[in-house]
Length: 305
Image (cartoon, rainbow, N blue to C red; front, side, top):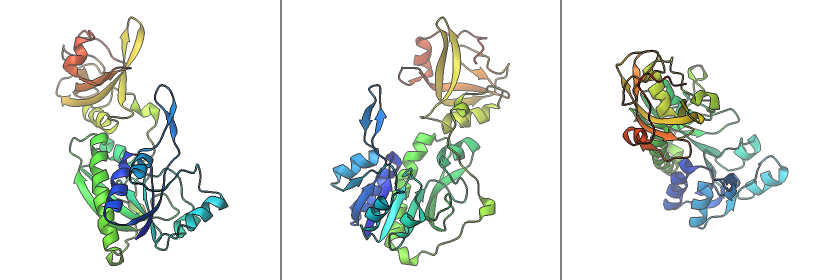
């Protein structure tokens, strides 16, 4: 098939590569423009742009697809279908209708659950037992289109980062198989009454509230790892220092919420306790708790904010 691919982050790269490897003609790759990144704030191309250029594909990175000129350029590609994976721009009905067979989206949830910007984070934080990929025919609503195919995977104790990598590969395989037998797939309408929403992660959510149950905090830690990272404040001689908690275990200890209970940095929660496994100080690499405690002294009975 003649395909327009639209995607931006690492999550989208396996799908682009899989479509190319399957022998489809990639008419053009649309991705977000390069953004300032790193300490020097130099412009950095998106992971999809880097992959597309490695494959020798045409890359287009308009800031918007709202102008008549951009809509005409898109339609002029005469694509059979567009494949969208975490592109980052809202597509107008004109864009959705331009390819002969419309636009298909690789969505990282089992729709209609977790429509929206952060489906993987929200599934982990909510304690869902499973998540997956849905191939959806796009329409103007937010992830409301009819579903063509779904694949599931257990969440277990995976972080959002680990789950994102796994779902990216599953989504690539599912999209290729869906396109292979596209005419055989029956689109199934979503049940709006069963829908849940996955809004973008707010910075305020990342601060750990030690009054919450340990199980909820552990899910928050996994749900926000590796980015943006759940964090707490540790008082020091130079003021409060922000520390990210990237992995933790639930412990049966009890105490005043936020209190350090032992020399292993077990921290009391509203119910139960959290035993950190991996942490990161500001400007430092992530490290296991034993290495972390070699570089900083945290006395028993210390109260964390």
